[in-house]
Length: 362
Image 1 (tube, rainbow, N blue to C red):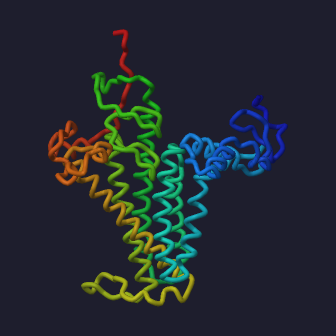
Image 2 (image 1 turned 60 degrees about the horizontal axis):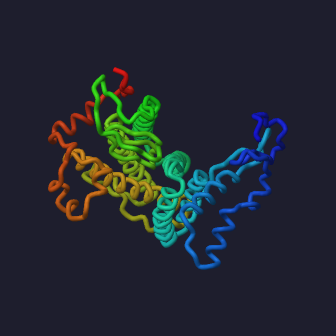
Image 3 (image 1 turned 180 degrees about the horizontal axis):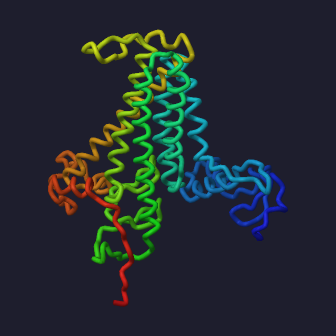
């Protein structure tokens, strides 16, 4: 058993999930889930979800690096974006064909890996690390690859930094409110809001908590979205879209041949020769990636604005049949609908609520 003192561990040793002393060189040994998975594959049988979960947890526990006082754990699902994204950018900058191939492949990969992680590792940080890695990578390329082309004005760089700062602040406050709310809640099935009993608490298997007025859990921002932070979620989407589109336009007008639109706005015209130089190709790829992400975020923002207007939470919208979605959900009972204006006032004017357990002895 683990005695709490790890001074006697060498740099390659650690205590595993069973509190037994282990060595990182034995990472492929004594794995029952791996043996069962391989055995099922050889016999042509389907690998069960329980076996996949056990194998994934074992991999996460045994993926470690040597460190003083014992090997430290490295979550492989969180490590994937840090490796994959820079590699995709480097390969995509080789040619237009590689750009199309890489982005198509990464789209399919995200769909497959998201389905796997949601079923096997609900609390995975893969999606949030992907978001953070994208921000850091795009900003690094803009500041250290695009800016040296000397085509970007100081005022333009400051404006972009303000948009990025606005997004980061909204993201930080959104996650802070979510964490504060979870910390204030306990396992009580009934809670009170300002001393008055309320309903509408929904369990989140990722947060391991019942969230009041939950709209959905955003895996990319790694927090639940509800009344307490819904407005910040919308603002974060807005700032992200603005920053991505603005940075992509600045990048494309720097690496491509620009033209003037209404004599005041520069827009890219001919980008056929960007792949003849690595820096130009890398900048072009980052701009294309920014545009694609901005389009996806814009679709999410439009969906959120529509659902708020009609009073349907996203968690309820995804459960509607296709016939109801074609009717925009207007043919279904909408218990959360308070009218267009009041629906928006509940989101925009919401102050962080304080929830406390009901005193059942009274």
